[in-house]
Length: 130
Length: 77
Image (tube, rainbow over all chains, first blue to last red; front, side, top):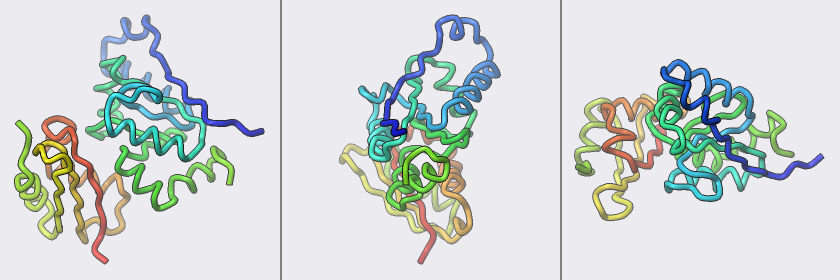
């Protein structure tokens, strides 16, 4: 079975946004997102309409790789926007997670892509065909 | 206030004294930079750790004052 890239945006449900008052709730939500999506990019904007050059570059790399991925628009959720930086101890967005593991931002994605490491990693996880 | 290129370089060198730092002003506006940092101290460290060492040198400015810094790291050949 061949599954093409079908980027979708995970929209935080309004109730969740209202009820989450503490940072630990945001951390729990982020953990759920990274653990339930094999390839997920936290970014500014959407795959179709990135709102920042770095996020745009990250999406372009994912498109090239051809693996299905999800995106989370941090501009739609201030708690996720702040919380993701704490979650990964990484100060910038975008952030890429593969199989629950934080890989880096767009610069590291580009370095890994150019070195063929990103392709290898996705293949190891069976997320793209060899 | 955007940071000056030499200021960025000085901060990195203060924390990573052996670093060879190359800063490029990408847009000519003193706000969008690319930094390439080469240091023997990066040897054996994953990329994330190499980048975090540079972020730490920049004292929390990354993602704030320095919102548009492209970063690449390497070890000396």
